[in-house]
Length: 129
Image (cartoon, rainbow, N blue to C red):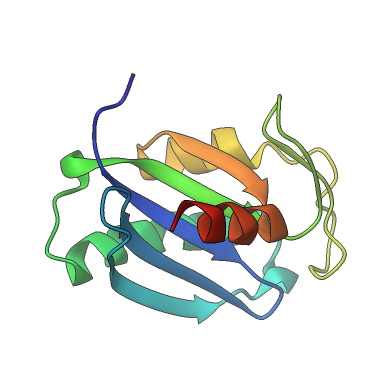
């Protein structure tokens, strides 16, 4: 079990990708950054962009990546949570069917990744804090 309290939250949007470092003990958010999604470049480019944002968040928050417990990724659409796949993303162009986002982002960022529907992520955050 991971006992770290710092995690990177990423919101994959149709227009922008937003990311920040979140302290799960206090709810403090630091290192906030955003970048255009540019989904028309394809899912590989978007996943690489999210991995780069994870590095930027750590730099902005003056935090070593080794202090981070993982990435929580909110994705707009239908997901296969068990297998870490996107099934249908209505607001991102291109083919996002059966894309192993969890595995690919974990590989690109060198951090564990959990995915969740973005609306569920917002609800969970409101409940927690």
